[in-house]
Amino acid sequence: MGFFDFLTEDIAIDLGTANTLIIHNDKVVVDSPSIVARDRISGKIIAAGKEAAMMQGKTHENIKTIRPLKDGVIADFEASEQMISMFIKEIPALKKRLFTPSLRMVICIPSGITEVEMRAVKDSAERVNGKEVYLIHEPMAAAIGIGVDIMQPKGNMIVDIGGGTTEIAVIALGGIVCDKSVKVAGDVFTNDIIYYMRTQHNLFIGERTAEKIKIQIGSATEDLETIPEDMNVQGRDLLTGKPKQVEISFREIAKALDKSILRIEDAVMETLSQTPPELAADIYNTGIYLAGGGSMLRGLDKRLSQKTDLPVYIAEDPLRAIVRGTGITLKNLERFKPVLIQE
Ligand SMILES: Nc1ncnc2c1ncn2[C@@H]1O[C@H](COP(=O)(O)OP(=O)(O)O)[C@@H](O)[C@H]1O
Ligand SMILES: [Mg+2]
Image (cartoon, rainbow, N blue to C red):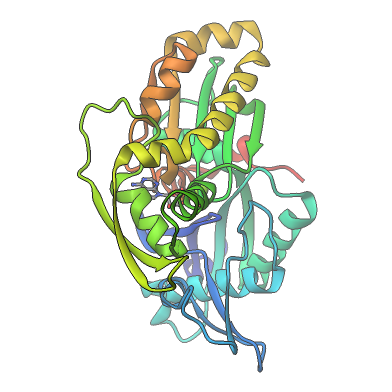
């Protein structure tokens, strides 16, 4: 321990395609959409997180909202660095400081991102005073957050359905044995709903409305135990141009999402078929763990369970399971060093 260690702060970041979360001193201190708003004239980032999200779909020509990690890749390096920096500066305990302390960080990143993008995340973190920066893959952090003992010689399957990607991984002995990342997750579900409303109801709706529908009545199957009430949806009639309202049921949304859920099912089946037999035997007993916001889609656990003939469990507080795991990794860094991404 060096003399200046009291100036170092530990933070865990889940850099998600839809949401970024930060844990500091065992508490979630940032939980914000991964969005920034840029002024086109000055080129400056003028808002990040919730403030930028409010502008989404409602900007004028001089302001543009950007999701820097939208499809599980870093589409805009500068915007993502600014976003990370703005979120770190939002941490209440650090805000009061006269200067930013040096940071020890573990950052969880989507597993689909390239070496170059990983390097960029690390460089960005170092530029915001990161003295020690470690990266961890999302399914690994999810497994730790769920409470799976990942160091055991026992196979576990994790399916993390986020905004941009669904990450499927079989983990054993602290490593990822086989994995798959598909670009079908929450964002695609939202677009499926927009497309469905346009083609079936001639109703043009925005992303935020579609997202609301997904959360309120979204379903992965028509075979639900508790049925959500029908929902009134407002948008613009494509034929008359007038604002219009239609009533829709969860059954319609289940139809709208069916093809995308099928693609996730296929990816899970493919990963299972690539799993070494000894680990497959373990998974037969332990089942599949779901995490990420997309896992909250009604009936998705049941549908996956029927498809795979395996028990399927949803993580507690699935939107926060990943940052929880990243936080646990940070707190037990020596023990978990082997599971971090090695360069
Ligand atoms: N109750 C819900 N039902 C279905 N989808 C949800 C629900 N709550 C959040 N989501 C979706 O989860 C996704 C975000 O999940 P998250 O795990 O934060 O993603 P990421 O890790 O990519 O940032 C979004 O697409 C959001 O719409
Ligand atoms: Mg995530």
